[in-house]
Amino acid sequence: MKVNKKLRPQSLSVYMTLMGKAGLYFRAFRAYRGLGDPELKLNKYVCNALLKALVNANSVEKAFALFEELKSEGFEPDAYTYSTVIAGCAKRSDGYAKAKEFFDEMLSRDLKPDAFIYSSLLNVCARCGLEDEAKAIFEEMREYGVEPATYHYAPLVNMYAENKKPREAEKVFKEFSEAGLPMNQVMVNSLIKAYLNCGELEKAAKLFEDMPSLCGAVGDVTYTLMIDSYCKAGLVEKAQTLFEQIKSRGLSPGNYVYSILITTYAKQGNADMVSSLSKELESREQGVGDPVLFNSVLKSFCELGMMDAVMNTLKRMNKESVSPDRATFNILICFFCKQGMMDVAFQTLDDLKARKLRPNMNSYMPLITEFLKSEKPDEALKLLTQAIENGVRPSRDLWSSIIDALCQNKKLDEVFTQFKTMTVSFCNQFINVSQCLLIFYYFMFVSNRRGVLEFPNEYLFTGDH
Image (cartoon, rainbow, N blue to C red; front, side, top):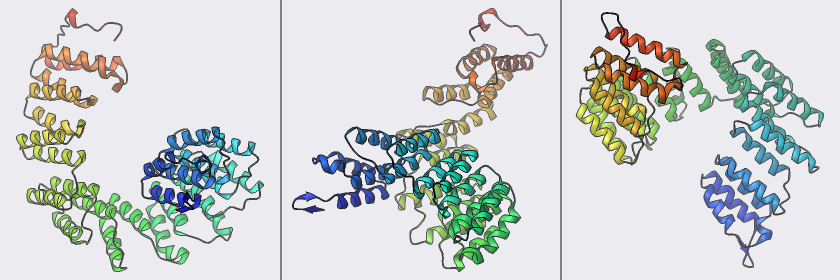
């Protein structure tokens, strides 16, 4: 990286690019901050590589802040720089406004927008679902003499797919085909997604069949899209056929494909297929590996009540050095509650906290629900209080269930106290305060068999509430 004891800009930019692709953008950032040569710190190759690494790592705010800092120190951005920061705008909720700001700034510097600038702008519009703006940019691009390429059409098809407008997606796809540009999997997948998002499974299946003649072999992404859709439509046999087709082609099905099939078979109560797919996963050279996939397998075994398989999956996680996350613990808490193993469920909750993981409502919900089923509202209320103290925000339905149980047990003082707390602290989960009062009066009526409501003055709500 050095020539005459001096860092070469090209070598440093390559290092930053590699760090960005590896997800180690902080190393690239640290290396940049450690540079002592002012000229090197403002080199366009170095600066562009660092900005790109930050954007790719989703650290767009840090990228934007660095961009402003660089300009204040004399850095002269080029078209590639603006293409990078505009691309980062797709990862912000107000992305289009920020992208236009960068675009106008670029024009003020007498930089001519190129194909990549327009591609970045179209991606921002697509991510934000801005159809009119996307059309305007596409036409403006042509006026500037930039010929549309595949990567200009693809964002438009994706946008209409997300907006559930398959007919508009078809129009763009047809225009792309008539332009004589080479067809690729990205374009076909985008149209398939548009059909699937609108429930047009037959059209998606037809396009899937035509894919080899359109752009060659079918890729993993396409298989995943179709398998997922067949499973959601209850057509698991067709999904399984595609799964076997992937393997027959010598390809390895992705983790998400396994997760989809295992979850679907578990919902159908097909323990044999769940066990078979799980064993197939374990036999792979790389094992299961992915914590999300492990959780899918674990949840499926839990839903089927297969205790031995649950324990074996946990052992497998430990063997592959995969640490359980909050979702893992939540799955186990729910499972142990359904098995009537409340002591083990509480121990699992304690283990979750011991690992410095923060419990959420799904951590407490199964335990509270079991207490309510067992007609132990006091225990349920105690656990709810503990959840709130840990920063968990209860749902409206859970609050209502606990108050209902208290009413049934004629614990009216506690009903007043808890309902008032709920209304003051969580009324934003209700449509309005009037609805809270109506629900309250309903519970009071249920609890008072005489149909006479006694509403003590000390529990009356003030106008502030």
